[in-house]
Length: 331
Ligand SMILES: Cc1ncc(COP(=O)(O)O)c(C=O)c1O
Figure 1 (cartoon, rainbow, N blue to C red):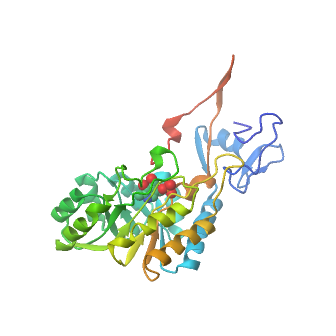
Figure 2: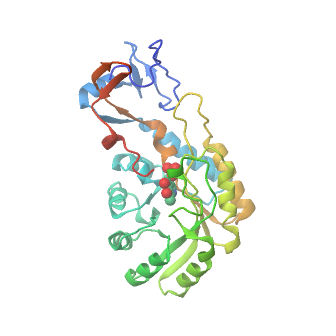
Figure 3: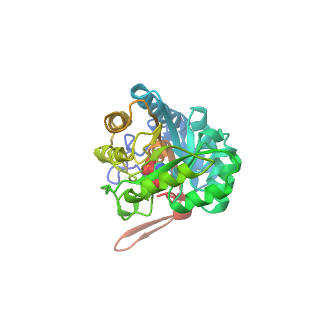
């Protein structure tokens, strides 16, 4: 794929400032797109296509920006990478070395996080339909937190746990996110989280168990969010349930896909989120965030080779890959 996606069709000039490209994007001596000092055409020739290429420096810098911008405003912040955004052990290992933990939604994702050397204490298990196998794997591994999403979760965990397990309750905030309908996980009709009217009862049931320890509340309002006020509304929706030691305010920060798309900065996001925590919840609480897409989007590119070009009423360019290797698994 000698030219790549960010070539402007009219001029065939490389668009090196394309917001989906790592900041190291440059033209090599032959005028070909290079990332991290490596020509993408050379990488394709060496490894074959389709090929995921990761700019590790960009990945590290994004992780450092997340941790730095949040901790500067709220020291007790922990960043957990939402593994569904790129379930790839070497990528997770880089993030783990930057002090991040992981958010996982299945025994399979948990296995990837563990194989990348993530300390189980920094792993958090989520899911609106956790099978017993998922819960048993998480309990056996000793994950730091399990997020309760339903009455069923309380019943199953009570039965399966044989030692104390810290949990959060995921609240459905009843906040409709202005994003694609499939990415809106916070409105009243979403399948995620416990409905506000049931939260007191779920909390009560957890408190009656011997081994489940309620650390706090969780909310995740949606994905690819560009309107930062949504994060504040979601945090405010947790306030009526009382004060807790931990608040996990989820992930969801959006990224630009094309030149000119809005691009909320991680600093602006941190300001909105921490502001909401301090105003509506508890300035002394532990804050957890779970960024996925925005952690990896800019550092990773997928390379394809052009196989066939068909010129008819419309020009079709067929490549040697598709959704199977570039599916947004978690979204
Ligand atoms: C519970 C939870 N946390 C975090 C994320 C990550 O969201 P994003 O990739 O938009 O940051 C998701 C995405 O679906 C999620 O469901």
